Length: 360
Image 1: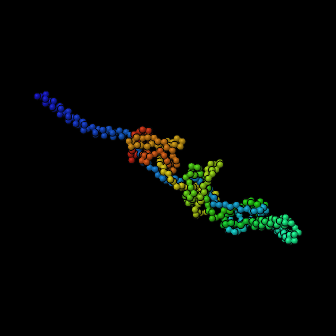
Image 2: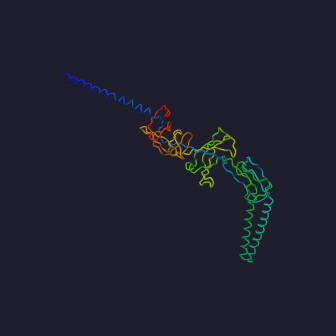
Image 3: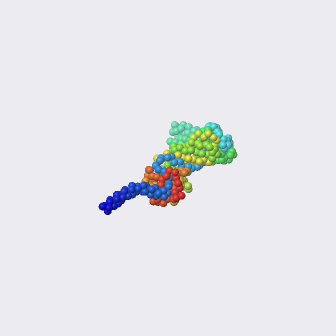
């Protein structure tokens, strides 16, 4: 009887003990997991998504006149007068330079005399031909000689007209390489003018990598060192089609909009081009980079289980405190932006908002 009671007592006790133990197990597991999580490094992350941004192209160049015209005389001769100096403004139609007219006028007079003689000869031969006193060949030769003399007369008159140079437009005199009294050849530059209606431009060279992003009409901003606080709007007007043989760059020109200050040809200018972008990039903070090898950057990405993987990507552009990457990620990837320097591939981490430096 006593033995039966003891057996029953221990059976009940064992059941109760097992039940208490089972009830206590989840709490113990939670404590262990929390202790394990506390031992994992803590990191801060940012969720990545592709963006289409205008990525500027920054370069520099010199302010230049929009157009410079080289003016010259058609014929050779001595320069009699030069009415302007470099830097002067001239109105359209104003006389700028003139050759000594003596040689040009003498040639014109000589050719005029020849024309008169050929005209008289032709008239005489026509009269003789009417009397059948000269052959057809003689009359034809006289006609050809007269026509040649008249052509030379027209050329001489044209040369006389272009023995003087007039301003084709309202312009600024850029250069005057010749002084009065000097002898010049036909076509030799006497003056260089910049028409004021062509405005100002900046010219510079771009690499092929930047050139393919650019097109005529893209906007730009020009900053002048001479006027530190002034930003001038500009537009791409010309893009070269052939690379420079020595530098390997392509010539590009931007034209400035209205310029509210006084500037000069040759001012140094910094240019920010803003080509329209049709490509999406991932923009990574510089602090997310944990290593660089050549043109490749290493970063850390955390998966949904808190496991870190090291990824190598190729930055396409450096933009201040960010790098733009075109490939190597998927939308929603979590990039480690703080704490990645102490991590290895395959580590487990805690993602926290209030960042505590990993391992410290």
